[in-house]
Length: 344
Image (cartoon, rainbow, N blue to C red; front, side, top):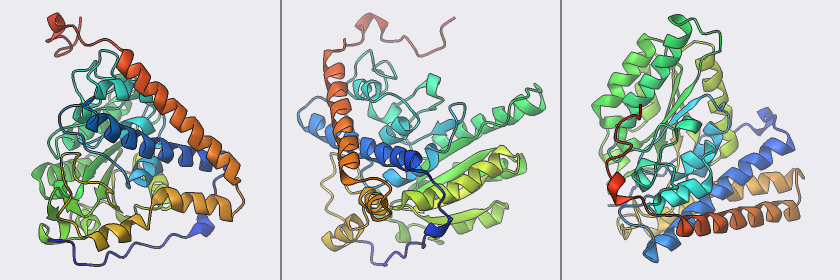
């Protein structure tokens, strides 16, 4: 059954945007990298180079880029099973993410994790998780240790912020409510980012929640709840900027509901027959990359040649990533149980 309700996206006040050319092109490049990386994954999957379930992020790039590109290298990000693009936005090299998807030793999880378990300690990327809501307690713990460092260990550095991403289906799970409560109680520096792509696998969001407006659930716990157009990277960044500032200043968490849409099926094994063609076409017309490109060109921030150069550079980078992954060694079967526990 398709989603019958017309989703009204919140309006963006572009008069409040204060980004220079360099920052805008960083946002554009990051979204292009995410989109093209996922398209390359689809190609490799259907060629038999990747195995298992692979969940792609096409269409939702504005959320990842809009939030993560505001964070410092010392901040944390926690993801879901749809985690490739979050890792890329956090700075994990595309070649190491690609190698992980190929199950190679050079992957960021040493080839042991695969698509749903991308992890990188050097980049404070706390992982993708195969089950929904698994990452929320992990992210809450990361935010707690930031408070602990400052208040108990008396470290002089400013608070490290944690961004926790999850989907609309997750917001009916107990971990979501428990961690909202704990985060407010202890004023943890965490941003809960709900990527409401309207569907929890095959369940339309409005059919599974008594209150479809997820951001309104924040009120019960006493934290700000904000709804944003998740198809507009500038809108997401505006909202996230306030949330990051609030968290870093010790004022506590924020819940952001980003209204977005995945352009592909739930996974590459999903024929995507439950959503209507009309619904998909309506959301594809809101493509966040095309929207930012139009903004850049209309405001004469960069010309088409500059944007095409960025596109070409991204494609070259991804081709090298595939070559790196294909030429990398398989994990040693004798080390099957390595990395299960911390090495001394």
